[in-house]
Image (cartoon, rainbow, N blue to C red; front, top):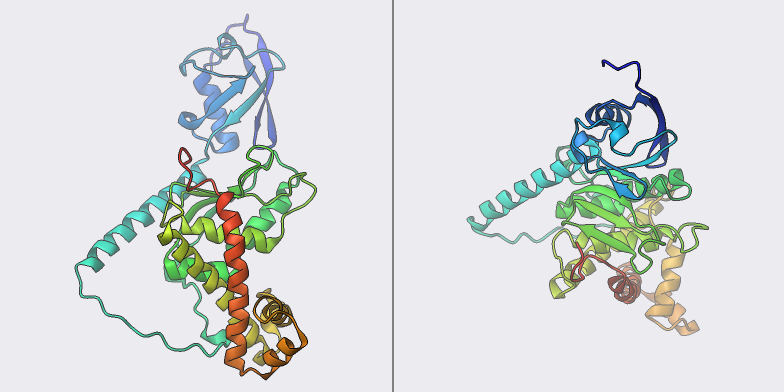
Length: 340
């Protein structure tokens, strides 16, 4: 880069997702050269960079000198944009959507056969799990919000959701794929618990409490995630949506229940791996929600056959989930008019 001896060197900072980069460039440096340096530092391509300083976005062409677009000594600039890695994740989502649409068209042209599934024995060995050949049925990118408190803990929570065995089970079964799993900031959208952008390009979940003094319970966040995954198929909160969402909640509950039952025959390995809730909690829920919680109810539950007992517990779980789903629906931004 050729610079005139009269050029003044501008020292300024550029902040991107919680990381501040300090730069020193001659005032005659073209904006395009600054954008190229920022791409190396952040991974955001020049065409997707938005430079905000003094509360305004830079509107100049790439060959404009940085000294003429308002950058001065000690300027503090905010960079907004999507990284190339995140773009790849979104592209994978689009490719997967086109693949699914092609498969659905091909299926529509073939005779349909209904296969009766085999009855599950309730052991872990009978549970289906995602195979390496279907690795697209996952969250392609995890992006915590760096400007919120404790982004590392937020990342750990999002990664736990993405690797949750029950969530992976339903994503594989229904061929769900999501480009980016990220957060909703409570102070920015206090009325929302979740948002699905463009049928799976991005899912946003509110994981912090209102005061940022901790995280919402994992089970509550996961139920919202199931709700938002349903929006990969249905946009509005109509009967089609409610039917699929109820099915996902039931499959998650059945998966965890089967994992817990299997733990009895596998020396507690499932619990050590983090599957589900202890059976005593589910039994207590069945007593209170299905049987009223009385002493006679306890005796009835104990007298049930293993299969009847399992069904009562599952019904108790589903009754609770249906009530909670009504609250989640009111706090979901996806099915609202004027919302992405």
